[in-house]
Picture 1 (cartoon, rainbow, N blue to C red):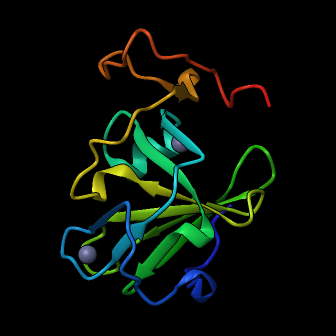
Picture 2: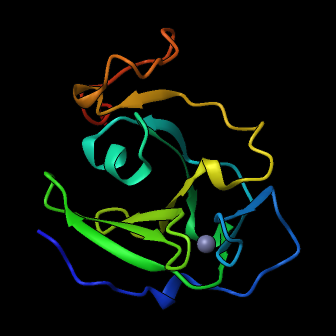
Length: 153
Ligand SMILES: [Zn+2]
Ligand SMILES: [Zn+2]
């Protein structure tokens, strides 16, 4: 099911000076800064992430909402996932660059697309998820734990 474009003003805050990492979309108007340690670091191989990223997977780092500062405009596209929750993908309306994702089943948490960061050397994925959709040409670290869908809770 496709939901209309929806702008989430609730999670937009003024930029602060304290950052672990910062980055922007391709054109630079949508900027994201994060602080604190990520809750999750993973590659998601699901078909939706493939379509949204144009690659074999999307690399995400999940942060607490209070550790993320978002400035600039973004558009949102929501899809109801198999879980019944709505997965929202937020992207720059000018350049189309993906910025971050939220999920109705995980309030207060934000998945930031790692590719936006100027320096992502701190990123250390702990798992590949939704490998049921993985493409053979997308090389993943063989040592990385792989899960057909989500890891067991
Ligand atoms: Zn942009
Ligand atoms: Zn995915």
